[in-house]
Length: 242
Image (cartoon, rainbow, N blue to C red; front, side):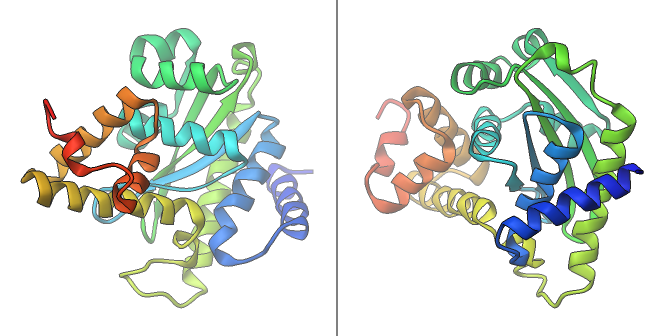
C-alpha cells in the first residue's frame, strides 16, 4: 500500500468516526497524519493573508495546547519551518537552546519532548506548516522523513481541493478556516485592537504586551485574550508598570 493509499484510508476512518463538516477538515487531516506517521501528536497552522499565525486544527487537545504555547512564546519550530520553507527537527536539547521560552512551556505543560515541523506549500489562503510531536526524542530518528514530506503534500492538496471545490468569500476564507481553532485565535486579534486603543500602542506592541502578561500569569495568549474581551482582565493591567 502506498503512502497516499495509507493516508486516504486513515482519513476515511477518521472521517467515518467524527463530524464531517468542512470547518473540521484540518482536525481530521491532523488525526490522519498522526496515525500514518505513528507520532504522538500533529497540528496544522498557517500564516494568513494579513501575516497572522492561525492554527487550523490538531490531532488532540495536547497538540492544540502545544500550538498555543508556541504562539504565546512568539517563536518555535513550526514558525521557523514556515518562515524558512525547510523542515525543522528539534529534540529536547535543541528546543531548550533555540527556543527557550517555548521549550519551558512545552516541556513543563505537555508530555512532548521533540518536534518535527514541515513547511506546507502555498494554499489559496497562505503558507503553513505541519507540526509532529513526540513524547520520546529517540523516536525522531525513526521517523520516515520521505513519508512525512509526502503526507505534508497530501495535506496541502486536501486543503487546496477543499477550497477549490467550495464557495467562499475572500473575507472569510475557505470553510476549513472557520473551525474552532481559527475562531479561538480570532479573539486574539480582537483583543489586540482593544489593547491598542486603550493603551495607544500599535498592533505589534499590543501583542508583545499580551505575550508578556500571559507568560507572567501562566496563561496562553488565547486565554488572556478571552479574559480581556470578557472584562475578567482589565486592559490597564497590561500597561508597563501597571
